[in-house]
Length: 442
Image 1: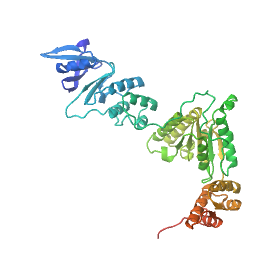
Image 2: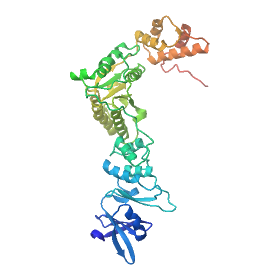
Image 3: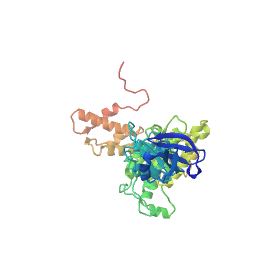
Image 4: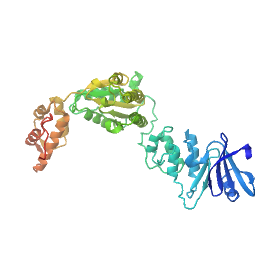
């Protein structure tokens, strides 16, 4: 054989083309029968003559990647994948079989009667994922499977192959042309952040988040970087989630949630993988916010657990949190069991502030009621008296009372909420202690 090659086993054959592996450690060989040789030579592959008995063949010897596309190894880097994608983009839409040469950057294709043409979308997905049936057009799903490429690489590879992207990633804000010390604050509403009924919490967020972001250059000159992580801790129903939602609304940034429904998994390493995925996506969308709800479910003290996977999950957060803050990702955690959180998580540098949020007092409830009723017709001259009745209860109770009073007024045909509506709504919504649930049935 040319180049001293000794043939090994036959792998397959297609229309007079015989695909063989050379002996162990040697290059790959393709024998092409005479009727096909002219067409093969037209593709740009250099073939050498070989006579075997009364048959004449063209011999193509290639090193490196040279195999049917369904059997190729997963690419190790972007350039290798792009070479395959370019060749795939030129493939005849009628082709049933294709052999790819990484050395030549070309494909040899065969049309076989009775066999379906190659689905380029699926073929590229299998190539990038090492044989998993995932279409390359779904770059979001593909990124979760592949570890060698990020989503920008995958988008470039897929479009190079001429495959239209069907499932696009979350679009991150355009890169700023400002200096490192500046920030894009176009999403932030003008003026200070206001949280109805929570003046102390509003003041904290303004001082430690909003003002720093709005005037980042001045703060950076004095050594103050992007805001560090914040933990809001307090009893259930004290308004932690409401406060965070209003802050995100004020900032106008994308937000990502880490909670039991989004990352918890019974499978080994799966929770850690999902957590890493969310942090990676958040960095691409920065500036943004990651909200860790019920963080005691993921970040409990490692010394109290013998579960190695729980230890692994805490370690994943320990790695990711400082990295995220350095990449302009604001992290806010919430819990009603702060004592269960691992001490390493609570350490400054990961979460700089731990803020206790208690149930709202009369003044705070009055502020919330004023905000809730500001756009609703009502005849309630004494909000302070109403607030006194709801003080110490979850803020969600105050919101419920306003909604229920509005429903009662509408049902009675009135055009505004009256004191009688509110009084009846409060009587219908006693503070829940586990014994006051409405019961329907027998």
